[in-house]
Length: 345
Ligand SMILES: *Cc1c(COP(=O)(O)O)cnc(C)c1O
Image (cartoon, rainbow, N blue to C red; front, side):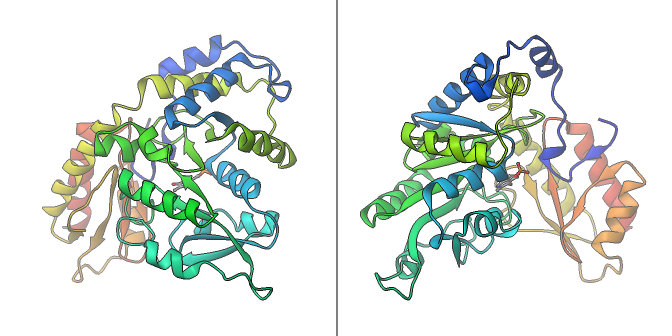
């Protein structure tokens, strides 16, 4: 890649091994269920999530939308975090397309929802209220700084939900970052919930695609909704082939991204004019802010850094988000620190 691009891990290009697998992929018509490469990816994904079945979808947004539409009917209510990706960044799809009402609870610093808050939000059986149907969690949590929640928490929420006739959907766009950071298999986080989405196209470097996993019955329903949304793809094995390489070879190495994020945070703490959140980073995201005495705005700093070939994202007037990934090496981390120092001197 030409730039040091820390804006997101979605900017990652496919690896040479992925391009080779894509060129050689066996394909068929996936709308007929006849693409062997898609079928293999879906089976791998289900096994890795500890679920019965999987469905290849175009994006994480589509995975979350299909899941929530499969679980909820019009006028049902989904409980989610006020910082949730599904609430903030998915164009209101669950209400626009599914008529699903949302109830937003405050996200805790680790991205979790407090079980007491969930309990208080469940609607009584009363014609004035929507019917509470679903709890949506996110792990790792994007807006909460790439923080992660534990297996114990996932089990506790799922047990609570099932006792109250609710289902749990997990937006696990970066579930492998959450798993690797805790030294556990992703299925430990994903098996207790009713459905889970994860992305191939972020830190795992595949060009396109996400997987939705759940019970066979749920995936059969999700399959029809994917078709309704226009998400039935034909020789999608070309894309799935890269996804298989991602699942086979790109998960364990996420630990390198986490280590580089730590190195980056350490370096940025030494730069006059920057303040890095205490305790961060939890995984592959670093959130530095401009010190009070810096007169430039974050956007101006972003622009100046661009001129030196380093891309960072200003997420507010004073704050940046930097994400490490496969295409950021040690030299890239050092260069980023040096360019920040130069721009802020
Ligand atoms: C990236 C992301 C998604 C899905 O994004 P797409 O760009 O639609 O693939 C969903 N949830 C979280 C937490 C994300 O970070």
